Image (cartoon, rainbow, N blue to C red; front, side, top):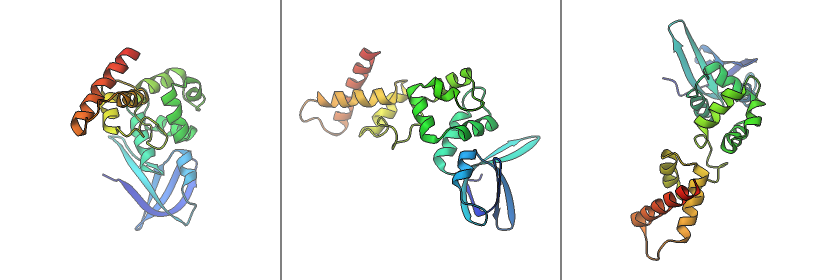
Length: 198
């Protein structure tokens, strides 16, 4: 329904932003990290949004960027995490820090986030490892074989391990293999390497 709202910041209070757009002032709930990243009162800001709608209530959630909103939506897929909990989690840990903790399976770092217990942190690692790493921060996502890495990840392999396996497979490619044939060989060899590693 809404992708984003652009308007003038009226007030920031706790985890709430008041944003004026064309005669309407929106009340938007944001992670505190995102709220602090936005301009101050009287300045223009763009907020990426997500609408929570139930029979008894409607609430608009906001984020400083699309990447943060995408992470929020991934968090909602984890059992036991609702919108308010997801906002609290994002407010207690930066994006890069969260991605590193998930990729490394760093339970201790996740447990240090206010309000995040051990069981929920474990569920987050199981559900999200390899799914929210950004291309800039993840060597796996930065692989020249992004589509192949994604395909292997969909089969259940870790993205970083998949990227490493593809790099090794490339080193043993027969001369003259190009285009689709090259990708097919790389994909097959990577699966062999990943299976042996497992």
